[in-house]
View 1 (cartoon, rainbow, N blue to C red):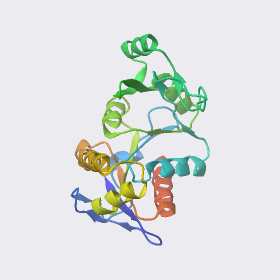
View 2 (cartoon, rainbow, N blue to C red):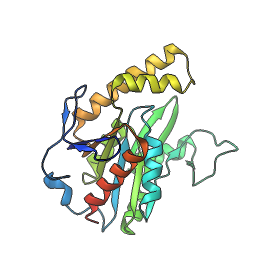
View 3 (cartoon, rainbow, N blue to C red):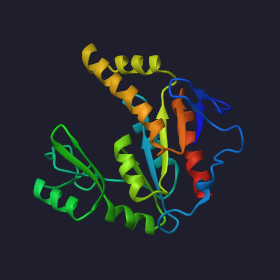
Length: 230
């Protein structure tokens, strides 16, 4: 595991994020022994990107997708109703509860979760197909979902996005001006829990501290390319 602080020129390897007790190695970048193992299927790579709410993970995920040729963003199955703005197969694969439960029983999901009474899951068959084509398949999921994926595909590459500090994250949540202070405090507590869970999970190969967005995208892209040996 390594930690990178994205803060303009010369991001440092070996930076400690004290709140989590994370300390990266000062040796060669991506020096962990397992990082040069072949991926699960042919030359493809399954990339997991996670991070607390407000850390910028979705923007970083899309930046990685744009920067690496052959990248595809995994499309989840969901039981939530389709809206007028949704595009089937682009935003989600929309299924009913019965279909979702059948797919779950038959082991067709890499991971699944229940969010406010609606179910979401990553379909394994589609992921396997993309990996066989040599593609980079990107999953933006939470820590619990990442644990499920790694238990089934242990060579998946995990990247977790961190804020520079907890105080910075709290301010970012407030700056969005989307929620009441009570809701912000609840979301902040959930974020603190998720960051500590990420550290303890053993799921993530790289932790990137997002001080500057473009630099964080560069660090994520660099980490993926080194993992693939390209």
